[in-house]
Length: 221
Ligand code: DHB
Ligand code: MG
Image 1 (cartoon, rainbow, N blue to C red):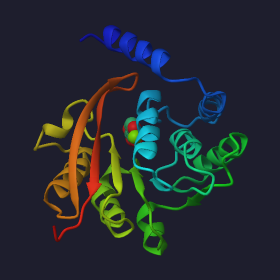
Image 2: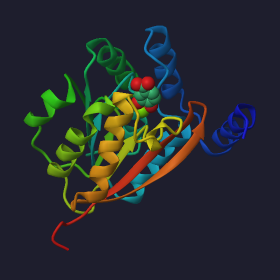
Image 3: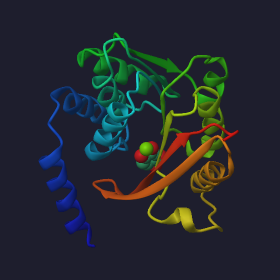
Image 4: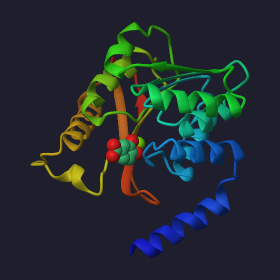
């Protein structure tokens, strides 16, 4: 596929399947104006997260990596009224932009943005989640997966973003620490008895990347 044909197809699928959400559009506008990088999940991936929440009857979400709150708002939108979403963001400036967009979207009643690096904040988190979305510094993916396992019960869903990185993930000699961290995460998902996982390559407006989707399972069964 050429960049033109996959972008056209991504645009076609997005306009066909994803209902526009003015609050998500506004979150992106503000994120760009604030100079945050345009690395939020694609609209189709955000919709996948929404569908996983609805398919799984998810009420409590943990997100690691808020950025400007795009995926946060998308997920919070489909939570039940008594739902909760804790999102962790290392950059105070990102968290500030995200909080404003989350409030404008009217989901601040169920969303908490906590500022700090995941590896520093997560040891103090002690509550249960039904879905964990890992989308932060890729070097720490095994740390995040370990917390995800600790904070969930069998049946929970864990999603990891950016597991393909334009195919660099399959290069065992990679010197890119983020790709190496992604590989360690995938290999942990394969061998850790608390998870059963797959991964899907994606080709969208952000280029060639992918998502890992894991089920938290009972290690004894
Ligand atoms: C980067 C991070 C992301 O989470 C993403 O979806 C795309 C790119 C990055 O750090 O380059
Ligand atoms: Mg990402």
